[in-house]
Length: 264
Image 1: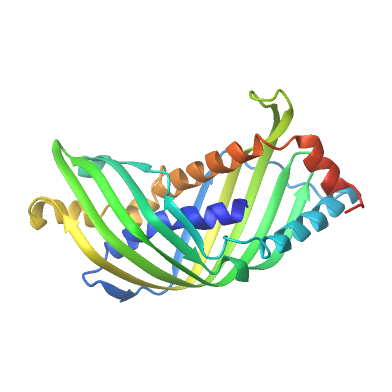
Image 2: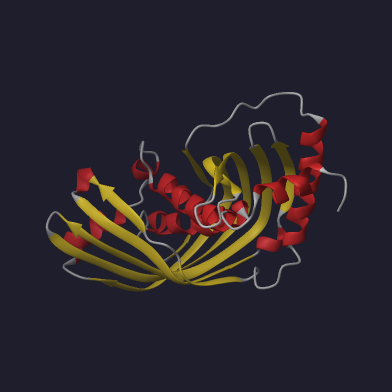
């Protein structure tokens, strides 16, 4: 689920890629993203017998994702908004997607999955041959003190997507139930996409293009994505919030018992 959430959250960055070109249909070539939230737990070696059992059972769960209905295509009315603050452009506001559709998730290839139960670390490598996404993109912000509004429809094909992810977790007592549950408190992700093809249509921008266009075009530029507090890191934070909300409903002992026993 974390990978799916992560893949859903990645689409927020695509309008930034679009804003670096002057045409609406574009073959952007390869794209690379790196981001993280929190601190990685120790990658101790070797894996214990319990770790190996948990890793194998978790891999089986990943295979089960391919059988879940309504996940491919994945359709969401709206994704959570992401706050933006680009100080050198005096630009502050939020971006979000509506009418989001993503397909291709079920075709993933699990290349590595390791769970370390002592410190609740997971390491995952996944390859997806093709991910297609579409949605209505909105930017609501202030440029200095001038309101800025940008709306467009975006669709994109991501070819050869490789995801390397490490997460860390902790056990807490769930406020609603009082039971011990798992919460993910760190994630570090490296994404390589061999080729990205993008189409953007139905663009609406308030204000003169010479005033509102360039700041919007730089919103998710390379310099922004590589900054210390990048939009990609904020996206990962939103993804963690979504996952942790669901994990509050699952007692940790059920999760642990399933992963560390030989029974199915």
